[in-house]
Image (cartoon, rainbow, N blue to C red; front, side, top):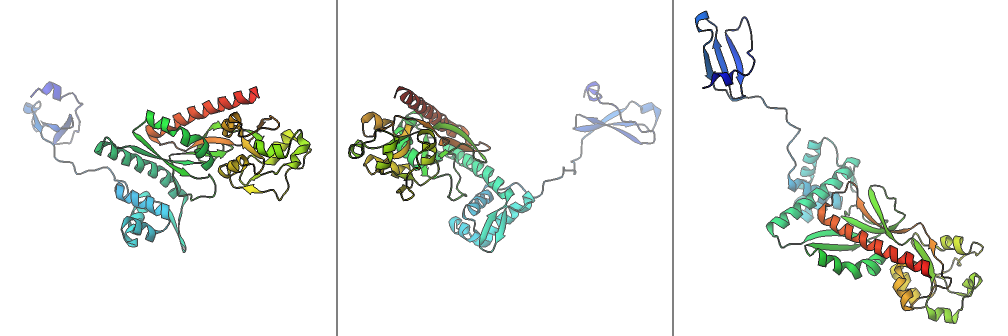
Length: 364
């Protein structure tokens, strides 16, 4: 054994020690005998003994994937009994898994209420991140186990946007990315089950939503439109003639008559309080196309109908509104490359439609 290389560490000195021990590359020790001057430089290598010292462990053990799935189901149902039914487990088993998870994390994930469960603040944060992480694990398992499988994205879309924009163009995305499957869920941003989680959303909004990023796509330009058959029966030459038309209201946020008339007809009182209401553009647009009345619509939504002559803009006006269609993603963004590919495609399509809308408004 080459002792020169073994003696690279400093010697530990102790005047009263019977033996002096020197560490050797964390694999053993050099022993130097000091019982007599004659063998002062005598060295002997001693193999190490197994260490019995371990660093302190975290509370509990790492969460199993099954426990995380149980937590996700409980967070979705907000009821241990219903979660057990969905997972073929007993209510007690679900409760014990969640309790063990809470014990390890050192905080409550649910508030137990007489009528069921409610997520705590910590539980909501944990749900946001764990749901995305489990989805990525499932995607990885599917891709490795079955390379021909397609990754599924869950996307919440405003029903009107899905109808006039997304669905007519979606085949183009599938041609570019045949490995991705997109599940379209018609959802509005408000008044829905908050336990639902989506990889991305396309919503009609002002663009400021807590906990989500928002990328504007199109739709801020709005205009008054009517069917030619309606204008034949009720000619409109000026703002004063609007009162002759049956006027239709949209029974949701944005694109209201008040915002439009503030820019075009500030002295006009607006449609009557008894004017008929239609729940959204997916209902309002067919009503306008069929001559039931005139309505305020996003210009980008009715471009094709205007170019084909199915609809007419009596005043050729364009009003810039506060609302528009936005691509939204939860923060932090953990959607992965497949979700990013879909979002990039949607942004590019939205930008193209927005440019086309602005050119049309300028020319007319």
